[in-house]
Length: 182
Image (cartoon, rainbow, N blue to C red; front, side, top):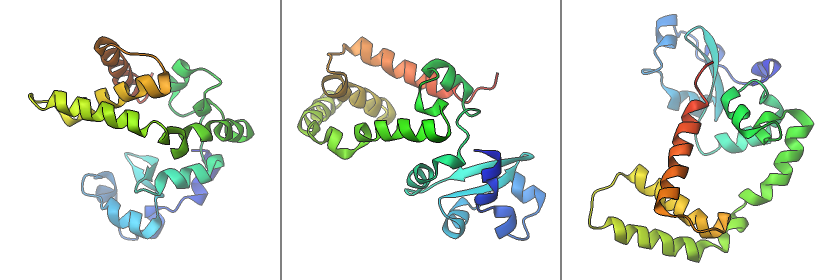
């Protein structure tokens, strides 16, 4: 988040008088639902000596997208930027970021996948039939099913089961690595 944007974000310290430092440090007992209800989908708080931004609820993504100038994409998630390159939307700030998001927006609209719903439906049903006789975790099922559904629709290329597993391993490793500190 851009440093000057912190002033625009509602803060628990300002709006929740009476929190002592022990309570503020113990987020496991912090009532995020009350903060969300009082402050909205994006708010800040002090945690482990640093200012953190909390985002939650179905409106958080929309609120973040409506206010792209609040975010400092250049300094966030360095490993993600290193892998995705300098032209990735998460690498850009300001006008360049807004232009790239405008270009990408149609690809994330419901209309972009609506025509593929019958195909996706068939793939999900097939995966459900295959999983019927054995035990599987929901996370594994959904990752494999969504990757498999992207094969004929988004990727327009067939994927073997091994390729599906490679995609999933990459995503799990890559997404997790974005929060590692150098």
